[in-house]
Each structure stands twice: as structure tokens, then as C-alpha cells.
Length: 324
Image (cartoon, rainbow, N blue to C red; front, side):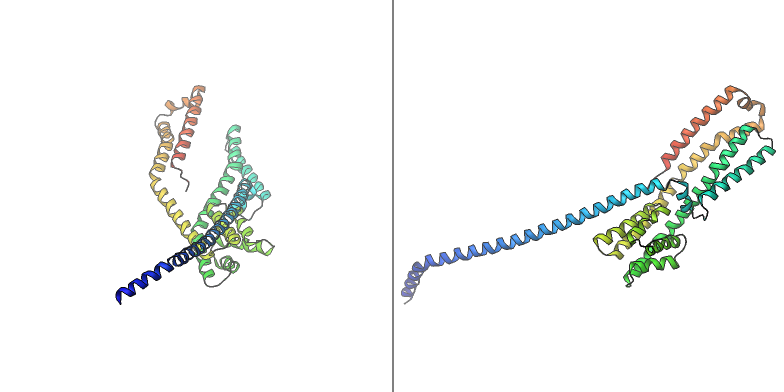
């Protein structure tokens, strides 16, 4: 019976072998077709994702290029005296600034004439007090205001991040900074809110902040807002990362400043050494050094020395001046 069963099974397999092979081939072909269809769908989905990423990348590149062009035009505009007065936070216009500068120069010139200063010296004093000193004062005020802004700007971004995560829109978060933030961050964000009230969008209003606060950190903030408004994304996370980057930049600047203090002290000592030695020689032996001031060859030596000292100070300044 076992042999009969084996023989019957063998006979049946021999008769049905071709049909079984055809079914196997059919199933294999169907499987390959389904696999190819799935693979085609995956390839198409991948191509769609690549196209979407390329579109977003192109949009971001266009946005960055537009912002860079705006930044170049603003950088040229910020060189004017009117823009520098706005950046310094002074509440005077350009006309009053020139009037005050001219009046101060005339007052110092009268004092110099009363002190019997030579006419050539009076002209130099008028030039310094009328053009040099007021502009230096404005530059000092701009630098102090920018440093104070950089100290408070990361904290303002943190407040915006917490406000956005709690459910407030970006406009209300900026209003919170404009009403309760410290100066000068408060003034800058108030200008952003006022720009929105006259019809500007939030990205354009943030981009205008660079006019009164020309800093790379402010430019980063404007770029983040512009990219988020066009490409979307998690704004709170982007602002949180920007705040961290700004704090790291400030720490790096402080570290570089600390490491370069020795070189700066050496430059100050070397630059002041000729004047100190000349003063000591004049106090101890006036006749020995008066030749430099009364003889034409001494004038040439002083001029030549001043040129070489200026070159040396410029070179040392470039060696210890780091951009971060």
C-alpha cells in the first residue's frame, strides 16, 4: 500500500508538474510587477520630495539674496550722518547737530585766540572740535548703545520664545518686548510695532530694524523671521537657537577680548613711549630737544616719525582686531 501511494503521488506530480510550474512563474511575475509598482511609487515620492526640497531651497536662496541686497543698500545708507544720529539714540536732527558743532568750534576758537595761540593752531583746533570731536562723540554713543543692545537682545528673544510657546502670536510677543523690555531693545521693537501699524509686514518691519541698529545679530533675527514667514517652520525653536547662537558669539567675543588684552596693552605702551620719553627729555634738558621744534630738519624728522608711528599703530590694530 505504501508503494502504491508513492507511485500514485509520483504519477500525479508528473502529470501536474507543468501546471505547478506555470502557477509558480505566474506568481513570481505578479510579485515582480507589484514590487516594480511599489518601487515606482517610492521613486516618484522621492522625486517629489527632492523637487519640493529644491523649491524650498531656491525660495530660501532668493530670500537670502534679497535680504543681502537690502543689507548692502542699507549699509551704504547707514554711513550718512543722519543715520548715525538715529543709531546713537540722540533726539536731535542733522541741522541742530551741525549748529551745535559749529558753535562749539567757534567757542573753542575764541578761547584759543584769547590764549594767544597761533593762527595755524587755531585752525587745527577748529577742525578737531568742529568735525572730529562731535563725530567721535556720536560714534562713542553708537558703540555704547549697540553693546547695551547686545546684552539685552538674547533675553528679549527668550521672552519671545516663551510667549510663542504659551500661545501668543508673534505680533503680541513683540508688543510685550516693546512695552516692558529694557532700553534700547524696547525702543527698537517699538519702532517695529509702529512700522506694522502703518502697513508694513512683520518681516519688512524687522528688516528695517537694521537701519537704526546695524548689527549682524539683528540681521540674523530679520532673516529668521523672513524665512519663517515664507517657508514656515517652528518659530519658537528657531528663535531659541538664535538666542543660543547670540550668547555663544558674545562669549567668544569676550574670550577673544581677554586673550588680546596683552597685545593691546603692549600696543598702548609702545605707542605712548615716544611721547613720554620726549616729555621727560623736555623737562630735564629743554635745550637738547628744542632743535626738533625750531629747525626745519627737526620738523622733517617729526613728520617722518609721525608717519612711521601711524603705520605701526595701524598694523598693530589690525593684528589685534578680530571679527566674530
